[in-house]
Length: 215
Image 1 (cartoon, rainbow, N blue to C red):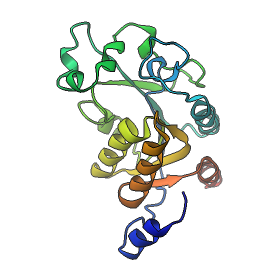
Image 2 (cartoon, rainbow, N blue to C red):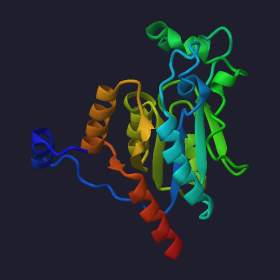
Image 3 (tube, rainbow, N blue to C red):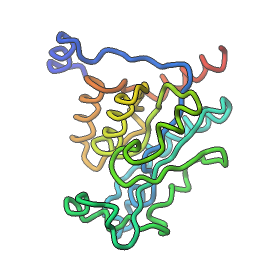
Image 4 (tube, rainbow, N blue to C red):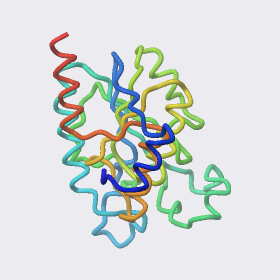
């Protein structure tokens, strides 16, 4: 992230300290489903160009496979009446593309999935709200949640804040998260690093994985 006057201002007041990795990570791949990744399909009004983010996420998935690191994907889907979307459906009509049992809510097949990976279907921004995410992580003794996916200013940010609130170490992977708005993406990374998570590079995560392999 760029170093500037605002960064210095925050650092002087104790923001932006490093949480650091723990002993047992999981990878959380947030909403890399067709509704958000198929940007060439005009019907996918929520989509953005996330090709790079998928590629960078695959680098992490490939490395994690040799270490048996848990991987959890999230999707968002609603029944045809969309009552599960609640007030959110009033705020943005794009949720109408997130219909259960359609390709739109399927995990993008370009991701390097395997049968050990699991998926959580959520209804709102955070991967933790109204789901069994905490139970899944606790049952596997996970203390570090490595986050990729979309959008940086929405579901990634909300999930990172909740992860911290539940006592996990949120690690947001800079090259592997994306947004429809570059301005929102950059501001959210700045804010996350200042208050709620460590914003880390793919290479830093791979170094961490290598340390785990040697331990």
